[in-house]
Length: 139
Image 1 (tube, rainbow, N blue to C red):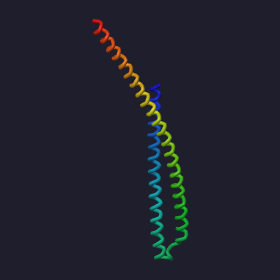
Image 2 (tube, rainbow, N blue to C red; image 1 turned 90 degrees about the vertical axis):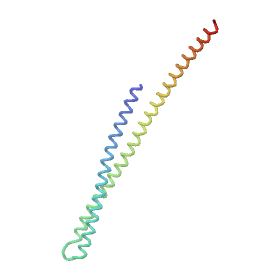
Image 3 (tube, one colour; image 1 turned 135 degrees about the vertical axis):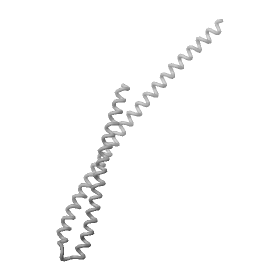
C-alpha cells in the first residue's frame, strides 16, 4: 500500500509539472498578445497623427476599420487565453490538493510506523529490564 501511495505521489507531481509547463506557455502567449496589442495601439496613434498632418494623402477611415478588426481579434484572443489560464490554474489547484493529501497520508503512515517501532522497542527494553531485575533479586 505504501508503494502505491508513492506511485500516486509521483504521478501527481508529474501531472503538476506538466500543467506548470502548459501554464507557462499560455502566460508567454498572453504576454505576446498584450505586446501585439500595445504595438497595434502605438501604430494607430502614429497613423492618426500622420493622417491629421496630411489629410489628403490617405484614407484614415479604412485604416481605422482595419485597426478595429485587428484590435477586436486580439482582445478576443486575450480574453479566451485568460479564461484558459484560469481553468488551468483551477485544475492545478485541484491536483496540488490531491498531491498534498497523499503527502499528508504518507507522513501520517510513516509517523505511525515509527511510533509502533518505538513502542515495540520500549516493550523489549522493559522486558530486558524486568528480566535483569528478577535475576538480580533471585541471587
